Image (cartoon, rainbow, N blue to C red; front, side, top):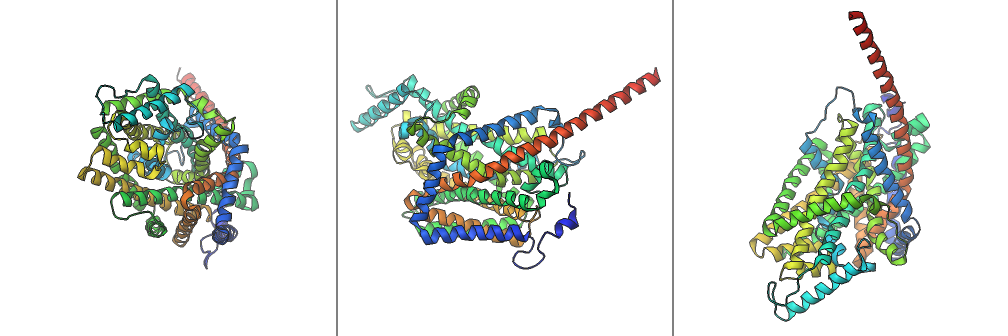
Length: 576
């Protein structure tokens, strides 16, 4: 294990690469610049190639992504329930740096917050009512047909002048209600425990080896039990480079979704007439600059403040939907989704597409999400590790896996159910049209404000949602620049490198969006799925290294407990 001065010898002390390991820094910069130039010079050809890689992974390696995600979940459960769960991530007398509320807020903000707002209403609606590529594979053909018949009848009734409550107006039956519950359940599945198990295993490995074992807060440290000091050589460099590769594209996916929703928000408020390249460019440049400035202020001042504020605004948005929609329906729907997820979660996790339509559906949804979470795992895991020093392993896994999953359940249960309720029982088909017919992911939420509370209330709600998107965008980019700097500096990033990588992230995001054009979302999906593949090999090695080291600690704990037990027995014997 190398000490501080030995690590300093591996870091450049001056020049553009000051503060970085030169091998890592040069390789990462060349890799990123090559991608940018390649994409600019080849244009449409490059975009087609990225989409081709995505299609190949979906058709041949979908099962592999499913198994990787499930294995992280199993390892997390095992570690949490075992004896080593009481080990503290740090010295035995250390306590957490951040309060629980601040910790949860930062988990939410850096992990999935931006994407959860983007898909908050559109995804449950699509899984409920869309028949794209066969529709929700966990619903029967009879149920899907009943949903289609209901909405056809409702549209015809509205066109004839009938209103909800009038005689002859269609009423959803039990099959439609089951489809609605299935839409919420599938959305929670994509954003819940399995996703956060991925983040938990990476964050736990980083925090454990950095704060408990004294190794650098870097991905390579998790391999120390397997290869020892060779983590500081070519093998370790390869691990960190693969992590950088995945992290860049994972963050770019999130930032791209954020830009799309910012454009939709500005259009909804009447500030712009349509989305354009100029809006995309200005949004990315401006917010990347803000995020970079925030990253240079440090976690405690920048990300903590923004995340806490955003949590309160999100609570306000949830309160809005509970007040303006049918609260009883929203609460009942959320509780039903919880029960359904607990019952079917494992089988849904292991479900693997077998037919061409199923592969297209799973690739467009589940494999996209799994690739996104895997690509993001290095970034989110390192950030979570950074803010979790002083917590026990059991507390860490419970907090990282359970709390955000409950947040996802409440978020999609309330907002998604509000859209479904209005589509089923309201007189306006606008939400259904935006989500299911037009697949307007970014705009569905803003449109729902106009449907539910036309006028000034809708404007206030739109501004709040737009503010949340911008802050989530900033905290994601903010955390990303911090993490990329740490990856390339053995856990000790200088301010100069945070600025450089903040600009790099903005550039990659911009290229992906401009390359995709009208198919920007597919371009972002391709980036996340492809960027995740090489990192899965790192992830498997991390889990093996973590389990090996924890097993040794567990054996030491047993020996210590046995020693203490014998001491107590001797003391009791002497006293008697």
